[in-house]
Length: 192
Image (cartoon, one colour):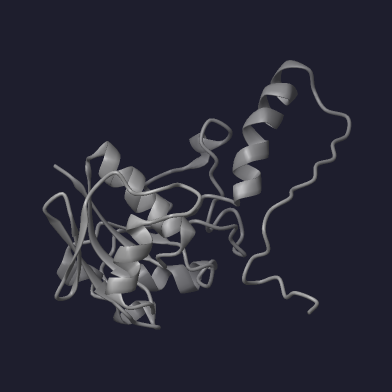
């Protein structure tokens, strides 16, 4: 039985999670919430300058888009508590807008009917409330009985932490320094 997933924010991360989930199978993406119209989202899903064309056919429907015979409903709702996760049957929600990174804000998806929320960015909440989990680094801290909202850390953390853990476990650390370089993001204003 497929895991039913809703995605809030269909930018780079939301689209890549959708692509990987559809290619691997086992997931049914029941809904996407984004302020961009559904036909534009379908186009952006199909064509990606960095990751190339999506291997699956995507067609636009009256209220969303379809891939591999599964329709994903698209909505444009600014308030997560008003999202139709319950009526869509979403068990999990990927929070990938970058806006709802605190427990109280991410929990609005649960109030709307989801069972669990994965924040695709660092959380501003305390670790005991919203643990930051990096697979193969500290995944054992996740307790499904206690944690309905989890942060998957940042892209930088997911790149650095596994390597740092291997070094720490085998040799130890006295001091560390790292630099991350990437394209400008929406939260970084340019000078001109």
